[in-house]
Length: 141
Ligand SMILES: [Cu+2]
Image (cartoon, rainbow, N blue to C red; front, side, top):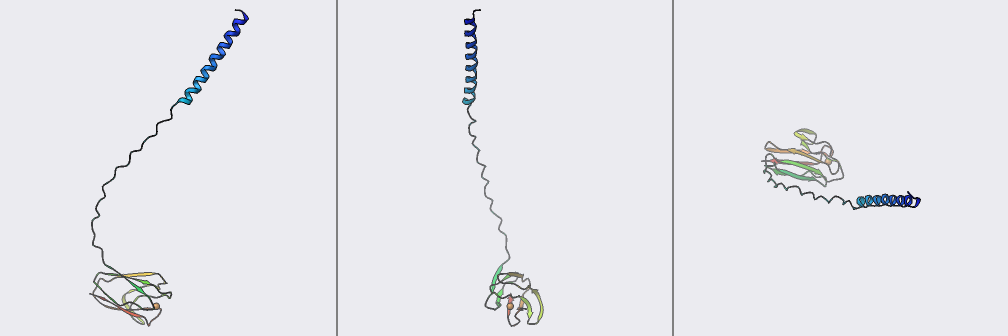
């Protein structure tokens, strides 16, 4: 084979290789990215109607201006006292100096709550152990 023919074959081979590489690269570039998948929305569960429950009554009262509230509630009511004063107070069943009733809160700092459920009817005197002059009464019918 003459030298010229050999050179031509080499150039052709080189061109063919290059073309193949270009085609491969083009194929890679042309590979379509996966189509975005659409996530189906989760089926909406029908909202269940909550079973109504009979909640025991709650009576909220404030301890304010250094006074313990006197109130009347139905039997089974939970009374929640909130200390709205800056001074600490207690709600303590009994009469000043005598703690002889069914409840006695810890000392309630400002903003603190205490609750007691009155399951028995009656008249319940109560007082504040910090300030024995503070008295009140819970009447349960
Ligand atoms: Cu007090």
